[in-house]
Amino acid sequence: MGKSGKPGYYAVARGRVPGIYSSWDECQAQTAGVAGNKHQKFSSLEQARQYLSQHGVSAAVPPPSAAATSASPLPSAAGNTAKPRNAQWAALTKEIIADESGWDVAYSDGACKGNGKVGAIAGIGVWWAENDPRNLAERCAGFQTNNRAELIAIVRVLETTPLARRPLLIKTDSKYSISCFRHWMPKWIANNFKTSSGEAVKNAHLIQYLSSLIDVRAHGMVYLQYIKGHAGHEGNEGADRIANLGATLPLQPERDWKALMIAKVCDRPCSPPL
Image (cartoon, rainbow, N blue to C red; front, side, top):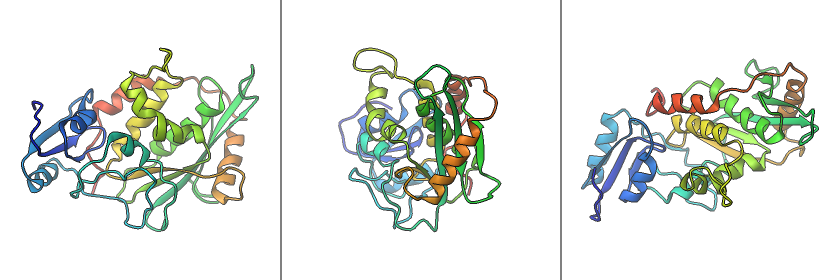
């Protein structure tokens, strides 16, 4: 599709965040570098909606009770035009969900004894409910740091939770994990995951794989929410206990995050099953 200055509706059926966009620049930001991307420009909103429907893109949107951050909410395939891409990433990190009854809610946490020192030991924890079979304690794979454990804990929630019609809310006390998406991701993508000093972003391939797992659950089907740690939240306390248990388990080899990311990007569905 060629670049055009004329107004229109850009429907992205397969991209980072499928939906309807109001400019070519926004459309390109969602499709550039995405293997097998599908997008088309239309003169009417209804045509754009039909195109998405033909490609199996669901019109699922967050429940109306979901409170937005100071940034604009994610676009939906139900008709809203897209907001700037920075807002899309920020919208993945909701501050408050007023009514969680329609959500699947998981807590993730990472623990690291001796963080930043030789001999550090890290574990990850996922908590759904007391004695829930989905609760997960694992040793952090590869290099042992708290930030990596926090990211991998979120990864494991997404890897072990089947796609469903209910949106998924992941609560974490990791400001680092939240900032990766709320503040840093747009700059990293623009700079090919290089810092302002030209160095590679730490945990880049792990973060890219996490991003690809989030992309699978487009249309507001997954959100990350920050909660304060050790503040009496049952789920956070449970995830913390499990993460510390995970740190006592045998060390696991590093996973090939880059290969996992490429595989996910090349073979991901456009929307969750109906």
